[in-house]
Image (tube, rainbow, N blue to C red; front, side, top):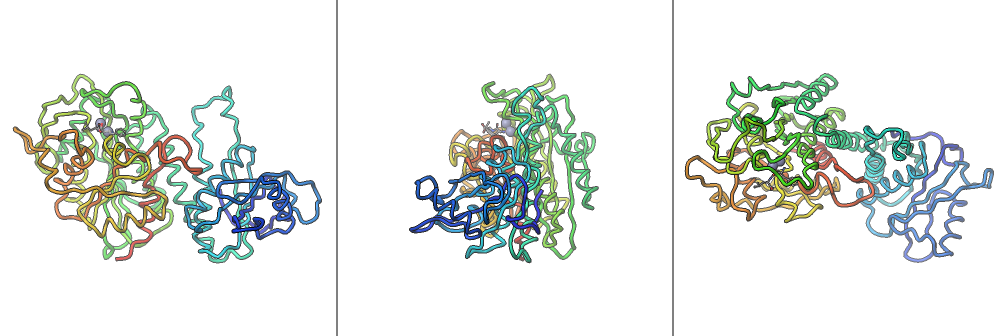
Length: 497
Ligand code: BES
Ligand code: ZN
Ligand code: ZN
């Protein structure tokens, strides 16, 4: 969708030319690229209608052949404000451009990259991310009768810079990360009837074939033979068999191995501990962790990153109250032999993750592990919809994740994980219960997972608050956000031993 254009704005005859303008301390904002356009900005500024503030915009329709003004059908100037020029600012500008373009039924646009005193690669990457993420819409199930169905989509966005040498890579990487996040949004938007565990394994196999990775799928029989009692127990009430998808990206034996595990609960009704019906439809999103790790693998493979070997595991199943369903009070045996008294069948995520984590660590001996899961409603109470919850046994891993999250516009916040919290999980008849008291729900969920980790550096991302209803931003349309895809991609890109 994105490329650098050889044609400059004056010669461009497409639907829209876009300029970016800083808000000056005093005086008139200027787009710094075109004197004639600056003239228009000056007039509009004098009227008090445009100051260059962040998110502000000015759209006009130039007369053909007016001296110096580009001959595109429309010209858009987007404000950048006067504060720090960081990637998030450009990402938001990209999102604003995408949504305004789509509102005007623009299919092709040319964005003139301003010459500003900042890291140009960061600027281009941010703009690329914002354009792709902001142009995302899910229209698969809209028929022609719905007015929204015919709304145009942005097909092509070209960037123009006098000298774009050295910026091609930034454009490409921004696009790869953002497209992978849009892919994760697609998976999440699908109804649970159209995104089942089998869809996860099909996608894993396709990715492996396309990028030279290895995909292994453990089916019901294999899971049983290996003793993954958590995922089997959760699956009991569903008519759809469970699948555990394992995707391997190998660069070189000397590189460290990172294990990614993503919760792939394709629908969480709560099971016998049934959830209330209001809002239950949102539980089709309970697979966003699984989507995030598969799509992060996609981005890493597309970008051909070389620093880390990766293994991604997605335990995938539904949680439904069918006739054979797991019952409160049942005792199950997780992979590795620990027993769990299932007090609440709605705390199912930790049961499937415990299996996947224990199995992945035993089988692949990773140097570090990151799991991503829509695990607890409690994280929404604690952190709302802006920061993902981070719980970990390793400070260095946390620092790297904080940095990756910051660079990606997906901030994290760490919660404690002292051994005291594990006390809530004591069971009278088994090794553990699967739930503690209500208090500190995000922490006790992570404390449960910790029992299956051992000494390996590990970080757990609770994305229940950020996987959808994420902070409103121009590049985050309503619905699933694709959270964690770009953070994980950035984590791998910036890996240095
Ligand atoms: N998938 C839910 C967590 C969730 C809740 C995600 C709301 C997004 C929004 C998870 O399986 C769950 O139901 N957790 C329970 C745990 C409780 C029973 C200890 C919860 O958070 O209520
Ligand atoms: Zn649940
Ligand atoms: Zn769940």
